[in-house]
Image (cartoon, rainbow, N blue to C red; front, side, top):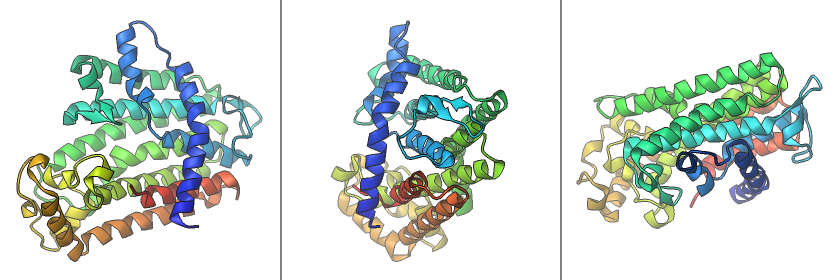
Length: 348
């Protein structure tokens, strides 16, 4: 299947579930007093987002249960023991955690925009944004308690959600730490990406399996599918930051390079003897021209660093799809494979 056809299938699957997820977010995270706090908490959730992680959760449930996509009520989904489970609540919980991380990331980086609108701490204020993020964090656990799963399965899902939040914080701390270190190995970068980005994809895929009572090998396989896909997703983002023109990217191209953020590309280039720190002049992205970025990109391309990153992402994607062989061979499983492909072939 061509990348265009894969993208079309993925975007259609996401679109078919997006409104269901959005409606569920309104149900599970309603506007409540104090209204300013909840407006800020819901702000990014209402601003959009593809809803990829909730889609992964809902598809994982459908693949495990071996039902036709969209044929079963997500609020009353058949567990493997015959009970009903609200897998939509789990999907919402994970999207709420994603929004929490974005709010706090934007505060730490003092970013102005997110999803085309002012960041929460710009639209409101830093104090309200911090409280909004904390509220989302707490609400995610509250929502996860409402799945109706067997107690042992519900506890397992909560344990994974808690572990995921801890690992995200660890990954963010490693990312900050790397900025002051003189040498970071590619393996260390991949570990950071796993903690900061991929674990939420892992949880999105595995938590439905826990709630539905799937065997441990299925839970582990789905978790690792998410980890591999999430790492590939972040590596692809690193590539796009350098190779896509600014007007299509939605931000200034090469910002990671100018801001001295380590990526798999720059780490590989350093190992090839490239003076990465000297690739561009200027400490602010506004001071660096597209031509300078072009020269830097060609240097990175010449030593094979961009292709190295692309191939690593492809290898992780193929590995992620093999993880799904524990599932029944059905349309939902194929859509999960398509999502893995989409994450490393998406363009602008």
